[in-house]
Length: 317
View 1 (cartoon, one colour):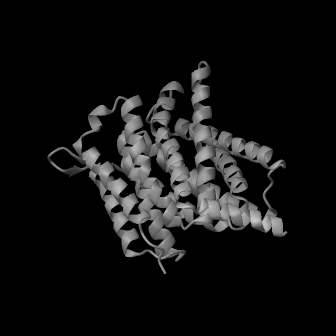
View 2: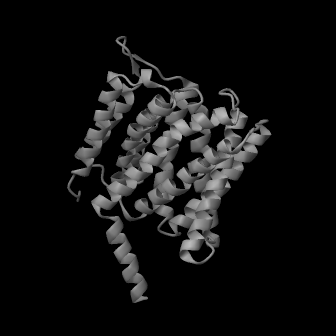
């Protein structure tokens, strides 16, 4: 027991180091940032129209079901035992799967089909702001603090700025596009708090794998019932689907482990790196370079400044 306790303690100390958190969180954000152009490319390869919600949900369901299988198999191999959740954890897994996978990505996939990859990546960054507010103000898991609030506000200003077009300073927020992505971000905020709580009672790898699988199956059923179809020709679509599953399996599992050992705010603030990666990769792979304007550069500076302000904050009492 002493050896197990020491291993657990050493793991906690290692995963609470700022450099480790920064590296792992930024790696997750790079993967998530690459999801924006990958999903857009996936729509083309699987012949999914932007108005075909059923096929989009079926596509998402296939991705997350596969992600769940990857997490469970990989985790089982690494731990040399088959990962099976405790009976009392099953209701938690289902609830988390509904909020994290079904609701969040149902809204996200619909929104992404009606918004540019660059705009989507920036608006989705509002999940950082929401996650910290939900954890601090609604569930009282940690103090908010003036610097944390300032960092969030500055980062969120970048989210708003990217939706301001041209000299007219007109704010664009369509209900079916950016509006759905914003609601998706709010769903993410609640799922972050759920992960923080549930990971104290269940292995976060097990939690991640089974919530993805349950949520992915539900999304697939919803999409199929709506008449959704996916058409794959050749290996390229399947390889892309595998990569999207890898993104979810790897990034979400690492993120869940970081949330287990660190305050929600200290981890979630790195989510502002998502638009940095999303903007660059969308501009490169989706030919959305016209959207990469001076306001985009300022927005990216603001979100990076928000990260820096929160990271230099001293521990709050």
